[in-house]
Image (tube, rainbow, N blue to C red; front, side):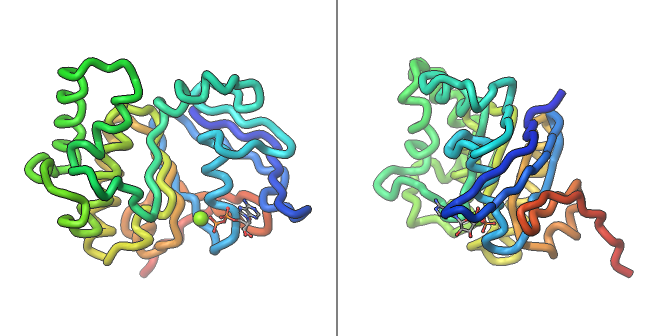
Length: 225
Ligand SMILES: Nc1ncnc2c1ncn2[C@@H]1O[C@H](COP(=O)(O)OP(=O)(O)O)[C@@H](O)[C@H]1O
Ligand SMILES: [Mg+2]
């Protein structure tokens, strides 16, 4: 079953096509890299998927929701099925690790005891249970990104979107983040990761799609000798 289905999607800014009649389908549980140069439209494509941007033409369907027809009160319901991770960590600087992960659950009607269970589970998944009372500035960049991933996982999403999640990290932390995303994927969450870190893509092979001149192409990974 497709978790993402984009059909003939066109997005333009200032009369310039960023995406031009793009087709893209991703299956439940799949891991896909989205590559392309800066300005190629990777972030715009991800924004379409979490319904932060509407296409000018074409159809976007995500986790059974049709982005064109979705009512604004249904958007939070869709977003709970998605986890989103950005390059800049976007943690709340004045709250500790636990509160940063719990934050998204306070706005739902989840009971406190349930919130605690979910937060500790998500922090365990990213290996940071022991840092739950630290403040974001006390953590390394890689650890901060793992908190963001825990926050994205706390609702047990069926799809995780990551927009250049290793963009601000050193190679060792980047490898840790990608290994974590791969583990999350093996457990059943579909992952779509925008990146231009080709070194990582080579080391951790998966399906690759590339945005170029407004088009989306499948890329075959050539073996390096
Ligand atoms: N809100 C916006 N308004 C105007 N232009 C935009 C907007 N968002 C993105 N763009 C333009 O669209 C192109 C693609 O941007 P983006 O999706 O951020 O690419 P990428 O993530 O691959 O770097 C860029 O040329 C960018 O300047
Ligand atoms: Mg981008």
